[in-house]
Amino acid sequence: MWVQFARNTFFLVYLAALDRVPKDYFDPTAGTASIAIARFRATKHPKKGTVFLNPGGPGSSGTRLATQAFANLIGEDWELLGWDPRGINRTSPQVQCFDSQIDFNLFVANTVLEHGFTVAFTSNLSDPVIEAQLVEQSREYLVLQKTQAELCAKNMGNELRYMGTATVVRDLDIMAKIFDGEDGKINYWGTSYGSVLGAYLVNM
Ligand SMILES: *[C@@H]1O[C@H](CO)[C@@H](O)[C@H](O)[C@H]1NC(C)=O
Ligand SMILES: *[C@@H]1O[C@H](CO)[C@@H](O)[C@H](O)[C@H]1NC(C)=O
Image (tube, protein in one colour):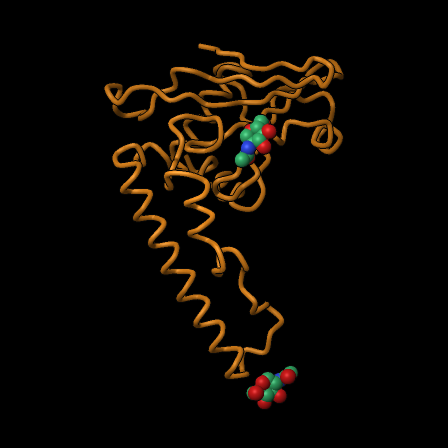
């Protein structure tokens, strides 16, 4: 079930791919997905188990979280496991909405996606000029997001149906069974959208 593609024993971290995960947990005929993981080994014994890490986004790569900095935060007696959620980075299938990086750069160039919102939480929204800016930037943002979603659907087709928070929770469950055993508890750390994923995990 494993394909290992890099190892750095000095840094105690290894990258691997969890192969042959069901693309769709309810349809075995859909084929398989491959989940990229990075594992930072526990250095203190006895080990307590694995903590799974998600950086949010949604859309951020989790493999880069399996580091000494997190071991300092969580404890060196835990194995740390960061993974790339569905669609992201080295996990496959990968979401590819644009034909190339250049196409993406052109799409965002000089828009609110590149500059961000100029109206801050602290701005005076009673000021009609500021209010108009917020309305204009929000409209631009929504139109660009909608267009991007349409491009994703056009370029990804049916593959998009295998992405999503509930599927990521099922991947998490499979990984926990592999690393901590069938009846092990799932230990999880997430931030931003990662806390939404955590809420799904608890509910499911
Ligand atoms: C993809 O994962 C690798 C390995 O963790 C990391 O070095 C790289 O920064 C990630 N790429 C993105 C776009 O997050
Ligand atoms: C906010 O804008 C309104 C309308 O221009 C103005 O009357 C008000 O004094 C402003 N408030 C602050 C704190 O600047």
